[in-house]
Image 1: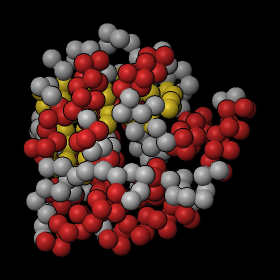
Image 2: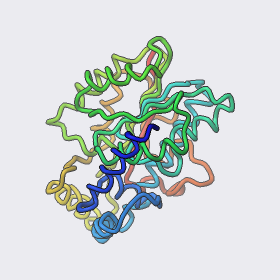
Image 3: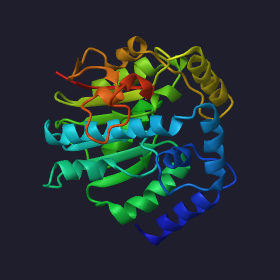
Length: 283
């Protein structure tokens, strides 16, 4: 990274410390170190209402890592586009992909629309990544034409080679009136044959009790008054985002049931995770 870029990133980070950053709050729940007192205070207020929110976030991150590992290893995919990537933290996509492919021939484009997340990514990737194979760019999931144009401009994604498109723990921040159906249809159409799409989000399906049902409703109401309002969905409401692509085994499931390993949280009772996810492949 050139000095000017690093200085700009540092200024953006320093100028954000008067308010919580959604990306840094998520980082805190994951056990990361790229967060500040104002982020931690906000996160703990959320945890008061949803005591297991940290475990839900970790479940989403674990699902992402298992999906990336399978895509890079068993499926041989070498190109990854991570939309809504947030902050680089434990289990970065490029690290997981390189671990699955010792050839270290994978390429990753990280994308976030939050300037602070991009600033942190710019700083952290400079220390942990290969600039010839990994980059972070600013773009918005809700503006698919512009986002995909910027992905192409990186020169890291070959048009005729399969891509793993990752939209992990993001769609619960997109309401139906924002046309997630049309947006996901665009991305599916932009990808070549053999590509996969990895999706997950929080769900309000089958709450264990009326108390949990109300807590999930309160969580949605709470975020309605923030810059990140959203919508929880059931499995049947979420399944449409995969279009007509074939869901890979075991299908759309609670995230801990998707090829769990020894570290998977909620593996004994996946429905307690409140996270659903799946991976689908383009014919």
